Length: 259
Ligand SMILES: *[C@@H]1O[C@H](CO)[C@@H](O)[C@H](O)[C@H]1NC(C)=O
Ligand SMILES: *[C@@H]1O[C@H](CO)[C@@H](O)[C@H](O)[C@H]1NC(C)=O
Ligand SMILES: *[C@@H]1O[C@H](CO)[C@@H](O)[C@H](O)[C@H]1NC(C)=O
Image 1 (cartoon, rainbow, N blue to C red):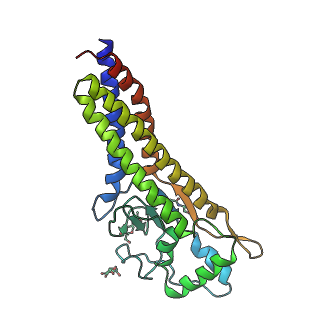
Image 2: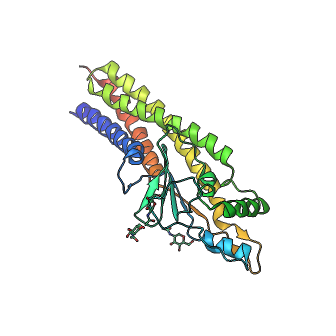
Image 3: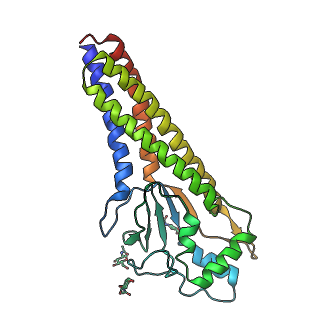
């Protein structure tokens, strides 16, 4: 009876991990006109208009943003208020509900600076580049660093997802050898998920350095760009926790099961 409980809880935990990871992947892929996203990282550009206006005063800032939710991205047709970056693409929203998304690519690189700069009208792209280069260097605008690490982290999360799927499936064959294989998959899956989640967490924390950047006006004005963690990363951490906890019951099942 206790053996059954052990097997059941191991399967349950690895299944929960798998479902969380599927949400992390699929949340970004869904193709509705009002995209509901599970993003890894979010950028709020709402305050940037005011920051830019302070930097270029007395010249006013006009036409920086677009309020047309279906305007194509990356064509200097207008900045959006909110950007959400996922594993396969990013989406840009004019308000809390309406926006448009970039095409899907596997292992999309996290390049938030490229995304926002390519939406600004040309003249503001030039001013923004100049403004950012005068400020202390930030990770937010280091597209190469963010791009490389986010892509590596994607493959780790993908491997972790495959391993947790295999742990669950192989564990369904009630056999001591199957539980041994599940134990191994759960251990490797947890490691991949851990490293992938740590990389994402670290690069987002570093990118958050932009949140407190001040423009050298008198008095200093906030730059107005705010970076935050997305739900997708929380799902990755939750899945890691479930998979780690499943290792022990899988191990006990493999050592004690007499099928
Ligand atoms: C975005 O940032 C602005 C100020 O910069 C703030 O007022 C607003 O609440 C933020 N919105 C969200 C959804 O975080
Ligand atoms: C919004 O942008 C789309 C695509 O560029 C365009 O077809 C549409 O007419 C625009 N809507 C308004 C109200 O400007
Ligand atoms: C968001 O913007 C869209 C298009 O501009 C508009 O139709 C919609 O009512 C807005 N929603 C909110 C909550 O402001």
